Length: 276
Ligand SMILES: NC(=O)c1ccc[n+]([C@@H]2O[C@H](COP(=O)([O-])OP(=O)(O)OC[C@H]3O[C@@H](n4cnc5c(N)ncnc54)[C@H](OP(=O)(O)O)[C@@H]3O)[C@@H](O)[C@H]2O)c1
Image (cartoon, rainbow, N blue to C red; front, side, top):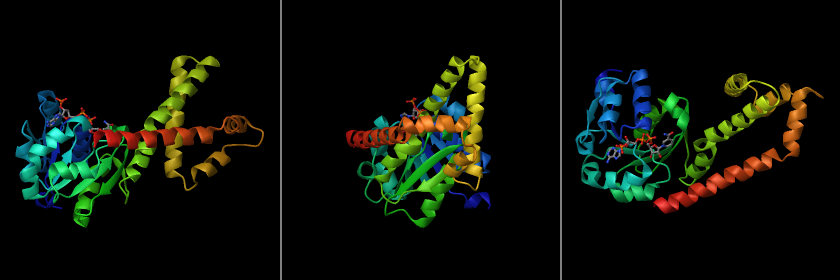
């Protein structure tokens, strides 16, 4: 693909998420001259420039004028104030607007940007900062197939991408993969602590826990077996793993997980109402 065929991408906000996306795109060979970002912070723009020779500016209006895709990478609390002044330019150029802001629904985005503007909402997660993210995308009716594909290209730069067909499903995504890294951190924290209680030094407990989590995740991703089968395969009758698994089952681990994810799902719905 020649550079001319790449679409122009404008990032509003050059914080952690935007810089991860820009870094991921550059790593995949996206031409730097097709990437631009704006931010009030000089430090963020300098950090963005270190990724490659992209366009950086303090003016949001400057970079959206000829953009094919505008990605909103600012905090949810400031999104309305950021978006409203861009509305007339967005209505003229009709770029695809992609929001990664948690909890702001497409009706609000549409109201602030203008009815005609095609919108994709995205729910990424923190491992996107290491390009190991899991993002779900939802597109409004105005979004064309080519624009869907472009949004997918951008988010694929920081990990895997899944589409949801109904916007409320993004609350499920928030409860599963959005908040999910913290569940694994909590589990690892608990494993490390018990490893120490049972006699390991802190560093060894930490290293063994981390590598076990990484190894198990890689097996789950790379094996042809599903996770239930992988678990059965490492659980010998009357062995150590079976003793632990039986203890988890007796302690209602599955019900605990159900309650926790449901709490996150309901909180996500409430937050969306508060931000609307
Ligand atoms: N980080 C994650 O793992 C993660 C996961 C899921 C979703 N998200 C979503 O991603 C979005 C960005 O998160 P982040 O972690 O990248 O936040 P961040 O590092 O704080 O980046 C946001 C950037 O936007 C800038 N900004 C503020 N007002 C602006 C304006 N008027 N025009 C242009 N830029 C402006 C901020 O500058 P100042 O600092 O000077 O205000 C900051 O550099 C959020 O909506 C968040 O909900 C993040």
